[in-house]
Length: 67
Image (cartoon, rainbow, N blue to C red; front, side):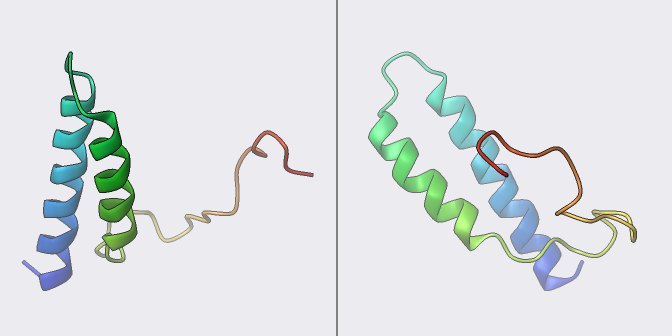
């Protein structure tokens, strides 16, 4: 497995576990906010093959408030 693949998979797994924790009764949502942003920012580039070659992240519906 390529080094970026392992990092990407581990970070995505941690984000998923954090999402499950956030849905628990009594979850510390301040912790979830702080850690989720840190994890999301630390995501490496997706490994080759995750997205198709013709994938364009700028192609899609406009977000609310976008002109």
